[in-house]
Length: 191
Image (tube, rainbow, N blue to C red; front, side, top):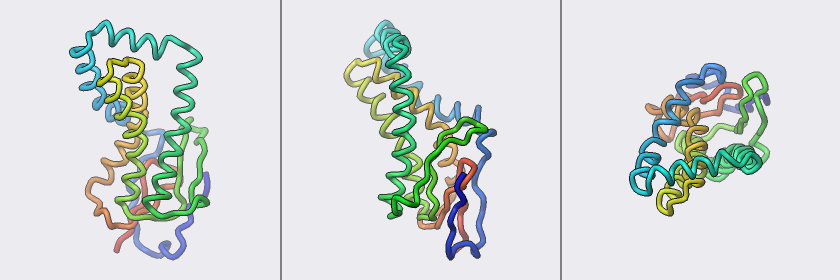
């Protein structure tokens, strides 16, 4: 992975709020799965369990469309992290790095420059909002099971992001944070 550029902040005391990617597993899966359950249940109760099963079959049953949606969604997920950090954190395009940690098979977006914790949180959350919750809501509102399960998959995929938000729960939004170059999470700098 790319080395993080800390510039003048390197001399500050920092707290590591991160988890190695190979230890994220079950916690992230549960954190991503739990928020989907109310949507699945509401869909089944509101539109019928047959409609939910048809949506499941439509999403997972078309091999080419499934993989196109998943692979495209993974790319968009990482781009949303980077784009949001650029806009909210006021960072240049050159500060965003993208890739795959091959040891764990984990795609990543990484900011090489520190930013306020509120901007970092927003960037961490954005893929779950755009690719997860918005499609689940749209699927629920329109009886579209394909959209529901697209949202379910990408909410589950955001489980690691939810874990990072949990790690940051006590950090003031104005605190300066730097994305960890190898783990899920960040460094928080002392004021």
